[in-house]
Length: 466
Image 1 (cartoon, rainbow, N blue to C red):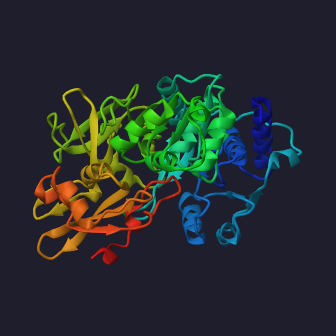
Image 2: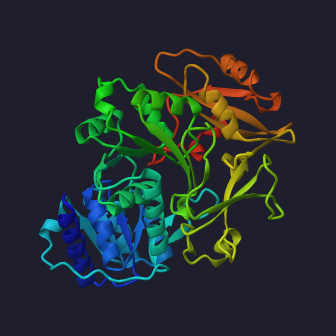
Image 3: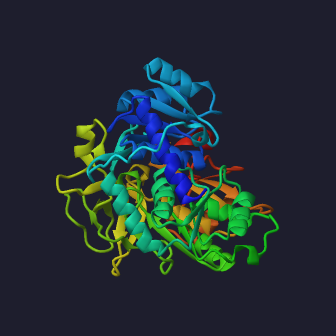
């Protein structure tokens, strides 16, 4: 699809939305796979001045109904093959449901609409968080947040019209939506989409479209490395930059990926509330997520709200043009994480080293308190990920009557590898303090993952680990 066709399609979509009563500032749910139809619908909603509320295509009727009510949406745009859950939720909420069919823009009869002009503080999208600590909350991402994020992304990638971006990330998620889709379109680059992710499909896309910039999460890089698909090194040499986010990147994966693909793999740190961007590192210091991106400040603060000394652990806080406006309709929740001068409390624990590089220690809520000692699962996971034969690992806390919590490692082995629990414990014991060593080890065929490929620790059946 050319940019001329994309522009016309998006503006005819905007005209069709206006004919259906969608007005400036209205919230509209969008559920569609990572395909050209998502891109056209997303840009059409933006052109109409509406607020896009993207949702996972596997969302249940109850989840869709919750978001519809919470953001007071006026309509739903949904992929035509999704089934009845979305349509039923819209009917119960009393809002229209519009199917998004393949190449739907070709059947639109409206003339292209003029693009609605909006200010930088206008809300462009509301993205709902996972709700692991309560009901999901909608992060308000402004026009200014998006424009700033794509400008910063361009400085990171150095991309231009000659580049070809590619990803298998879902576009309803902030990473794929902003750091890939909007970042590539903003510089006139080519964008290739893979859905769903398989190693073979992604490698085919790299080879066939001569991709130069790719983006994904660590589990995707791991899958590409171990896949036996018959692709040669020459098939992959077009890639000059790979961008990783969503979870900590194991040092082994960083090293092996750069060697295998012959390109630079950079790791970013961000979240929905920072429009995907906060820090970046370029592989010089494994384990670090680097320093703040352009126009952004990052501090590590203690419980008293003051910055802690270098090397000490505290909560990561971010200030900059990509920090969200707040949570939709949640003043108290917004005040609990966002100060009047724009500092966002991320809920992540981290520390700075003497070079000013940030290390994410763990999520504040994932901290394991074992016998009075703080244990950060991400630290243990990094050590176990380097154990020969280990493909993936998740470390979680289990209730313990004596110690308060015990440490459990859930391990996925590489194909053909044979390891026992004692091997995992011995590897960790040689590299970690005794109180950090997992006492419970379970081997599983795979870890539960979300749509982005990120491991879902909350979905691990912890009672079965005992």
